[in-house]
Length: 158
Image (cartoon, rainbow, N blue to C red):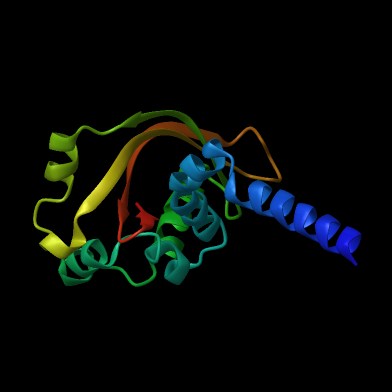
């Protein structure tokens, strides 16, 4: 019984150590999740998922604007298809560079937000957007864009 108990405790301690020691890079890469989700939603023309990539206060400002489009993913997808002169396109992306924003830049990014929506950390991501027709790769569109992501209330948002 003592042998079983000591083996059991050593297994539990080993498992606890592995679970408690997450890869720091894995934790840091969580800022990429809203960008990944945004492009997956865009590629599948899912406006609800696309809009959920944005923080509630930002989304509220967008919904109140004259530019509000509840079918935004479909609209963007259609425009990208026109750019490639194709009805069906594949939207892909690659984060090519990142830069952590300074405290001053984060404060400017959060201008107009309530104090309870304070941005804790933020990155400026350089993203290469690639759009092509799966039927004819000659019609390819590629562009670099800057996307800011910030951490609000423990979650990352565009």
